Length: 167
Image (cartoon, rainbow, N blue to C red; front, top):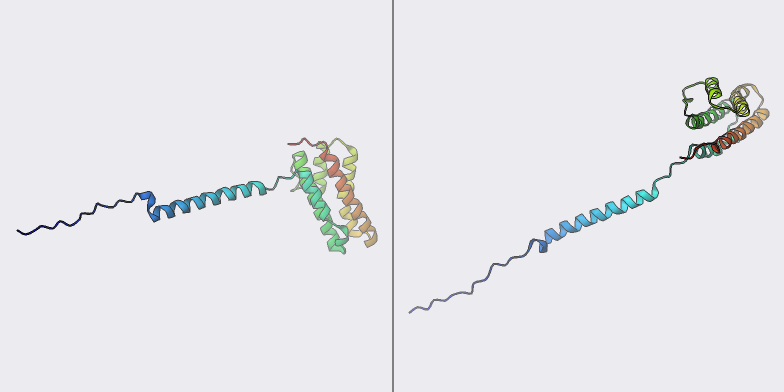
């Protein structure tokens, strides 16, 4: 009789899907992606620039404006254009009126309706009329006027910020 040899039968070897290398790789990639998003969100939250109040923006811009950097006829005009732009931007936000697309004198007339203080209006008028000085006054006089108008503009911003309602 012939002997029948039975070879050992091996069971099917089953490896659960969570132990496969590809599954572990995908889970690792997803974890790295999620951790990256969390770190990015924390970074963005901490580095969000706090929205500065309009008076702080105006004061920062005015601090950068130095009269001694504006010598010569064309540069003097640039100084007053920048000075009135900063002032109009601030007052537009402060009093909720549109002044940026208006001439300086139209802006002054619109502000007369909103501002009750005649002293403030007088200061605004002297600053706005400063552009005329820039065109015709001698250099030494205009440098002094530019410095005065800059300091008056800073005082206007500071005096109107205290009465502003904080939001």
